[in-house]
Every structure is written in structure tokens, then in C-alpha cells.
Length: 398
Image 1 (cartoon, one colour):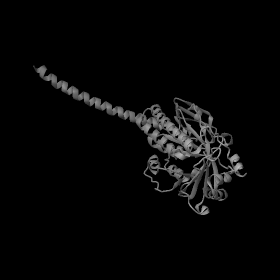
Image 2: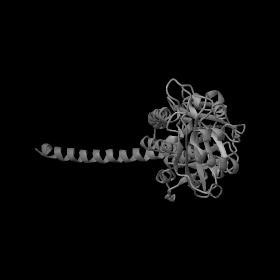
Image 3: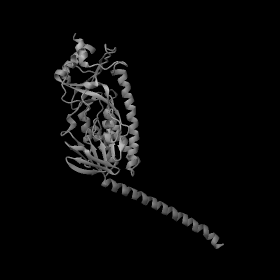
Image 4: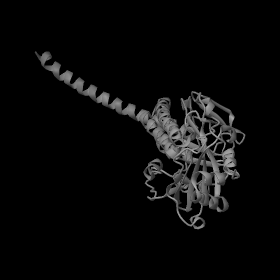
């Protein structure tokens, strides 16, 4: 009887003790996981190739998601990008603020944004663990990538990193190591114009002129504009022109072709297709502002991760500027990578796999949208070849 009475008490004590042991082990496991994560992060090094908006965005995210990791951003341009670039439309300040994540705020405005101001905002969000190296010469040809990391040659010196993010633009030198497909030319060029409001005398907003009916030979065109404010204030104007591939400069890292001269056909085509008001606008920009061509290339990578190399921004996808999703999509890429790292804090490969799936899906959606916009707005009717702007200008003179 005494044994029977004592038995349940012993069992209850054993249950309680077992539960305490289990809880203690769970706490110890969590402490061990946190310790191993911290130790892993303390040893981890991340390289970001490309210091434009996408590169700085992902560096801001990584310095929070990988709290002890060391991050190096390599940018080929030797000066501060805060004085480069033109206007950006479709900017969501809340997304930039979330990417930076330190409570800093962007002012709300009704106009477009100057690229340099947005770049500076992200640059100022970098901590001491994220180092930006301007004028860095990165050799993609000598880079090796495997399941544990990447060996990168920068300014002739080999360095080993646990993760390599390629945010090096639409002509990414790392893309062929990841994706099996390549960018293709859309069939049209966006000519971008920048001019001070004082020189122009008025501020364009929205579509200024559009040829609603096809010009003989199938030649739809459009010009638009919007104000850009901030540390620089100017009118940002665009002119979409269908152009044959053999008249387009090769794919370049930057979307716009620097130091390009305005061709002789440019103003005659504007006037012939869009009328006197648009022609006067562009004549002022040519004379007193800056004009650069932006051949539109379209791309959606079939995969964006290979071992420890991940593509981001224009390296992973490019869209028509009409979508206003260039910089926006690069920021979303950075945010998605941060979320994936939070979901899989102890499995970098699983985080990269989740990132790959999300980016590939979104890139394909944007590509389809870009193709539809091109067919509907900027390309000749089906079966009509894209005509040379120069030849069209010649016919308007006769």
C-alpha cells in the first residue's frame, strides 16, 4: 500500500523534473543557436558589387539582417554619386525609409526626385560595418563562386567573401554565372532631357504630345515631362522613339549613354511627329540643357541565385521606364532578401532560395507588363518593321 501511494508522487516529481530539464535544454538550445548565429555573423563577410541605389539599399538591409557581418560595397565610379543622374518618378518615400530602417524620413513631395538626393539618403544610412569603396576595380573574370562563398579580385587583390551580391547594372558582368537567358532590345529608345526651369520658362507635367495615329511607315511617338525638385530643380523630359537595333549602342552598364551627341534627325522628327510646341521644348533642351539616349532593354532572369552569388536590381531584371519600377524594384529586391534572412536566420542557402523564387516571379511579371506597354504604346503595328528615325527625318524634308 505504501508503494502504491508513493508511486504516483514519485511519477509526479519525475514529470516535473523532466519538464524543467526540457525547458532548460530548450533555453540552452536557443542560447546556443543565438551564440552560433552571432559567431557566424561575426565571421561573415559580404561583398556588394555596384554602389548605386540598389547596392546601397541591400547594404542597408544586410547590416540589420546580419547584425555582426562586415559588408563592403564596391562602386566603379570614382566620385560621389550624389551629383549624378537625373529624375526619378514613382518614388515611394516609405519604402526608402523602411530600407534604411533607422527612423530617418524623406520629405513628401508632389514632384519627381533627383537621383542624387535618394542616393545620399541611402548612403547616410550605412553604419561603420558597411564600407563603400568608390573607384573600385572589380574583376568578374577572375571571380570564383562556390557553395561556401566567393573569391573576388578588387584592385588586383583577392578577397574571400561568404556572400556576393551583384548589383552592377543592366550589363552585369556576373549575370552569365547565374542566369541562362540574356536581355533583349525592346525596339525603342527613350531620349531623356534635363533643363532648368529658368531656361525653359515653364514646367511640363505629364504627356505633352502624342501621335495618336501612326505616322506613315508605322511610327508611334510620344513626349512627356515632369518637374524634379530637391538639391537640384529641373524639368525632366522624355521622347520615346522606335529605333532599329543596328542604330542602337550596345548594352551598357548604365541605362543612359553618356556623352552622346544629339543626332541631326532628332529635332526634325520631333517637329514632324509631335508639332511645334514639342519641337520648341526640345530645341531649348538641346541648346541649354542635356540630352541623352536610353535604349530600352528588357530582361527577367530565369534564376538570380547560384551558390553564394545573387543578382539584384537591373542585373536581375530591366523594364521599360514607363513602368516607373526601375529603382523601386531594386529596393523591393533588397527588402525581400532581408525578409528571407529573417525567416531563415541559420540557413543562408534557404534564405537565398526564397529570395530567388520571389525575384524570378516578380521579374517575369514586370517583363510581361513591359512587353505589353511596348506593343500598345511605342512599337509599329504588327508586321511593320521599325523604321530608322534618320530616314523618316529625311522624308519629312522632301
